[in-house]
Every structure is written in C-alpha cells, then in structure tokens.
Length: 290
Image 1 (tube, rainbow, N blue to C red):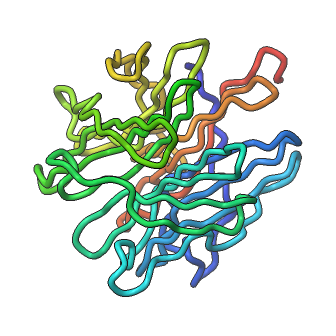
Image 2 (cartoon, rainbow, N blue to C red):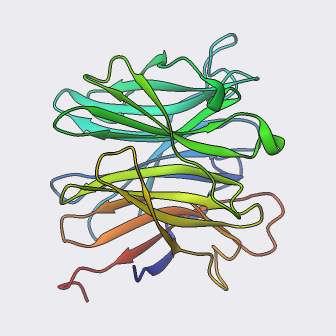
C-alpha cells in the first residue's frame, strides 16, 4: 500500500495534560455525518488513562479529556487503563481496553450510550499461559455470525517483551471462548502486538505492530476464517525523518465514507529518550481524492 504520511494528528499537549508524556493506541470511528471520534491512551508521567478527541469535517482535532480513568485501590485497573478499542452497536458503544493492577494486565469492558460517558464493567476473561503477565491491545470485530476478540498476550519471556496475537470468540460479547494463538513472532521478530482487524469483501485484514527488538513497523496479514493468517509483509515502516523516525506503532486502520483508507498510529521521533510517542496519521487516497 502506498501510504501518504500526514504527520502528527493531535496538537501538542500542555504541561500537566493527561497525555503530556506520551499518547498511544488510537482508535477511530466515523459518524454518518463525517465526524471522527478518537479514543486513545495518554500518560502524564504517572498514570495511563483513556482519553477522547473528535474532529469535525474540515476542522482540527479537539481534545475532550478523560473518557475512562484508572480505578480505585484494589481494583483490577487501579494502576492505569490503556489500549482502547471501540465498536458501535445498536444499543450504544462497547469498549474493550486493558487495565493494570500493579502486577498483571487484564482485558476489561465498558459500555456507553453516547460514546462520551462510560460505565466500566471489569475484567472479561480468565488468563492463560500465553498471557500470564499481560493481556492487552484488544481489537473487537463483530461479524454476522459471531464476535471476535483479538489481543496481544505476554507470557513474561524475553524480559516480558515477547508477545503473540491471541483470539477469542463470543455469540453475544457477554462471555468469551479462548482460541489460542493465531499469530506468533516470525524469525527476526521479538513481538507482534496491537492488532486492528476488519473485513474487506469477505477477507479479514489484520494490521499489527511488528517489533524486531529495535524498531517497530506496521505489518499486514490476511485470513479467510479468522484463525489461519497469511503474512503480507511490512506495509508502513519508520520514516527517514519526522515524527516517526524510530517507530510506527499501534495501528488503527479505517476506511472512511469517501473511500479513502486512513491509518492512525503512534510515531517515535529521532533522539527521543522518553518513549514520547505521539499520534500520527497516513492515508491511501481514494481514486476521487486529490
């Protein structure tokens, strides 16, 4: 794919903002009127929180602050929340996200009638050996037959940096059946993570983060059944200059109503020593887009 990079998406944060240190894992939905809604994880140097922003057609992105805050002492997300994925359903919005209790990261769910005010419902799945340390970076996909949940599992190996992509299914989104690993690191990869899966003409496309231990790129795999995936290689690599010189990470790919294919992702500039990721975007224009 011939991506046209657009640079940093959100305006620079101010000191003390909940994303003043870094911003990660954007997730974007488009309304019928063309308004874009983004949820993402922000870190202020102390705590991860899930934040929200919107962009009206022809305008810049506008921050709306905290959508889901860290839980209270003793909660499974008391030390922070991150990695949101949001889907719209006939009854409202559903968000899968990760919550950290100080030792283990688990997948959580929240619901909202309007996409702005959220009610958290706690963890959704028992952990297995593949995600003994962390289950995170969820991606929800609702098909005609079932719900799919793809996520990254960390088992603690390779200094807790190695991760695989796992899957689970559900008939309603209320309870989940684990299916195990669907994509593991290949030769030369340390980790695969941050899946974004959607359907194009009956073929599932998964964009994901491919980490070689030094830099992170965005790769693509495809599948007919959601379980067996064919790797298609790197689709967006770090640029030679600009805000994504070192890494492009955590993709969210959306086909907008104008036919263009957009990706929002996290970029890490050259010389960064604090992992100060910022949200960037790129586009594959539609035939009618100049």
